[in-house]
Image (cartoon, rainbow, N blue to C red; front, side, top):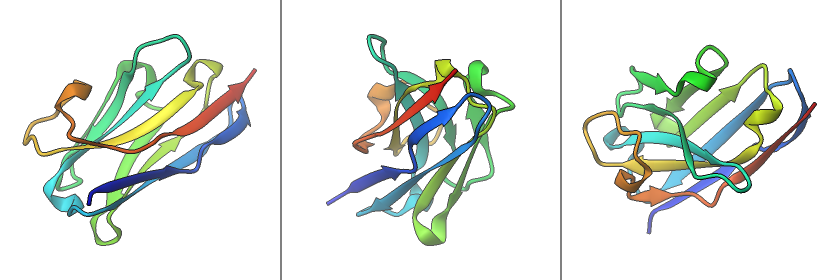
Length: 124
């Protein structure tokens, strides 16, 4: 059974940093491209960024470029999202997801496996 479990969310002030983790079981991280998504109240789910299965290539949505960094440790089957210089507009539930696609995928519908999400709240 595939499980993705996010952790590391919380309440922080603007300008602070958080690191989210996504621990994966039931699949081998090195065989999947992974993504982070977020959903704010009243808004649609939004692609945040992704990392290729090798871990060597990342892609980010414009609003987080230069502030967020995705990495993964295939040996630990864990992916990370380092979030710096957080803004109130980053407030959302953050989800990690896995796709078997070989290309960079921004559409959530193409991710087969999802975690339950972790809340990130940034106060001004």
